[in-house]
Image (cartoon, rainbow, N blue to C red):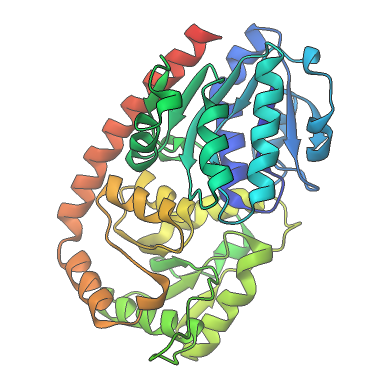
Amino acid sequence: MLLLGYFGAGNFGDDALLADWLIRHGAWLRSQGLQADILCGQSDPLGGFIEGPALMKLVGRLVPKRTALTMPTRDYRAVVAPGGSLLQDASSLRSLLFYLWVIRRFALSGVPVFLLHQGIGPLQSQLAKRLTPAVLRLVRLLSLRDRSSYEWALHQPALSKHPHVHLSCDPILGATFSPYPDCPGLASLPAEYLLAMPRPTGDLPYPGDRTEEAAALAQCLAYAAKLAGLPVVLLPLHHGQDEAFCQAVARARGEGMTVLALAPDEAHRASAVWQAFTGARLVISHRLHGLVAAAARDLPAMGVAYDPKVSAFCDDMGYPWCYPATVHEAQTLAKLDLLLDGREALQQDVHARRLQALKNLAFIEEQLRELW
């Protein structure tokens, strides 16, 4: 089979989706005598996980992305996308067209395509809005990770008669990665902390507010840290995109903030990222999988919605959220007050929502086996 996704690009969330899928389905793949080729970027998407060497035994090849445009479809019994945000053109229309072409190419060749736990959008161009539902009607199973994406699918005429469009969830809500308590980078952290996973967005400064983006977020984190009585740990979930911004946020505050800087080639880097949530007691995250990992542990959290996928997840899990340009404003600080005052009730609510979401996930797992 071919595993399709944004793998090997240095983003913890995407590589975690791949590792989690192989962990869940490893025994089944072996029983079917299957190996998985992985469509990926330049780096090894499994190398950062403690489970990586064992999972690589399930892998046939790491396939460069461009190869999928011309590779023989007859070599594969199925194409599976384990999750992610493949179907959007906000970051790149070219990327969306690439994935739609691969999906269409394999599906029209008679290879079943299973798109699992996907988020839809934003779809900004008219071309994206027309092509995406037209191609999705060709897939055998389409599961959507949030209600917003699911409702989008229900309102598409091209998908209205599709028998297998279902609401699922992000599978990292139930991930079971191995603990990594001996990571050297984690040893110096305090026992408990506010864990923040920022990313630069360019939403500040804006007219009427000349506050720089790093300073605005630093102000928000300092406010939350004082309320919670916790130090702040900044975690770059995407090393290449986020580390410099994390450093800028720490400098804007001057003291009291630690950046957990893990080198891209550090052994078990992804496992260290996962382990960092063990000491978290409050999470504030731009990154979707920072919030997903928080919900997996029933932690109180707030999202910074640089993308609709963040607000969609927060709405599904009952988390408050704000926009990047409002992190330091009174309305957001008031949300932090309410979050911390009601954290115990919120944690109970998140727990209940997570259990229901995992029931949806289990249903999709059954559908995959039946439709294979």
